[in-house]
Amino acid sequence: MADLHKLLFEQRATVSDREVLATARLNARVKAFAGQPLSDDVMDRINAAVAEEADRLIADGVLRERPDWLAVIVRRRLYVAFGAKAVQQLSRELRAMGAV
Image 1 (cartoon, rainbow, N blue to C red):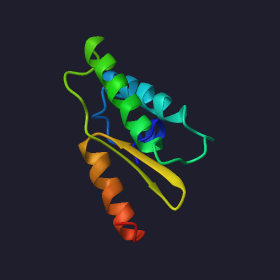
Image 2 (cartoon, rainbow, N blue to C red):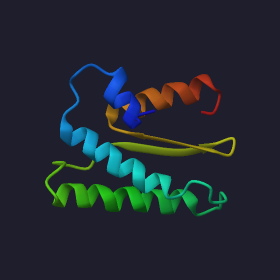
Image 3 (cartoon, rainbow, N blue to C red):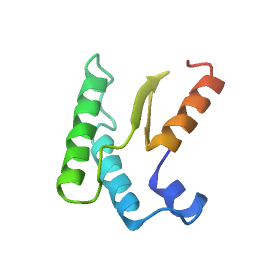
């Protein structure tokens, strides 16, 4: 999963300041859902929050286009990834867990 720790410490130095800022802001929007009961519409609300923040990041000039993202609930746990590489990695991890 693409989180701030991974971006800062585990990936090569190809991450720009803009990507770190974008990831932090997107993660903050998702963390707003922490501790809330999982309901039928939670994925819709998460996707709407991420899309809204992505639009703000574009309007603020932080991003040029909407990033790829994946938000899934597996075994009552939320997994979220931002960016094409992170989405692919999360997909592989979910497949390995037998969730897909």
